[in-house]
Image 1: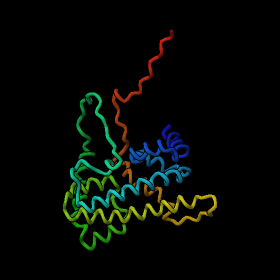
Image 2: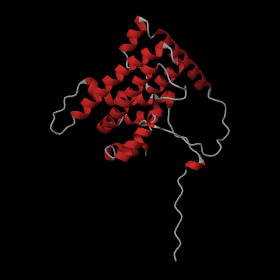
Image 3: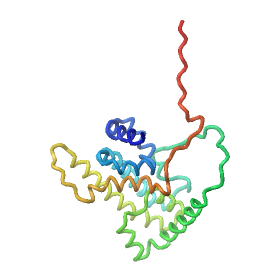
Image 4: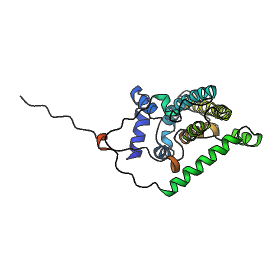
Length: 229
């Protein structure tokens, strides 16, 4: 079922302004559905069109972050750029204790991000990061929140912004070469750009998973029947 919805969104609605606005407001798909999309080669062009805009939006966010060397609040992040908001509906159910594996993963994640921030200015780590794909946007948000106004935030944002601009260029060329007048000969980077964009924007499914909050208030109510007079 999810595959059918993904295909419909990208094949039929990718050029529709309202559908594009919804995708922008959600920053594309969650990690689970982005991973599923990577197994659908027929969706490559639609994915590239959507995610080129998202990657360019992320570039603008990182430019702002590099200038301000941090954010006003640790709660403000890359999703806030498109005005995403959630309303609390009703009282949440009582939560069970957190999964112990998740607890350990979050602790390890914080340690790795702190180590990256501490060493990003050093030649060895800085060079290694420059040759990597860089942090995904969810981890980038966490790193900048931890860095605050420290100079490491500027360095990390600048390095990651360079990678995002290169990825946006690869996506643009991939889309342009689908013109019916062109004979597409994709480079390896261009052909794989839509896969990289999905992983970068959503994060790894093992860490960020699906984004499906549910409550009774989320149910779609049927309209009331009109009275027959």
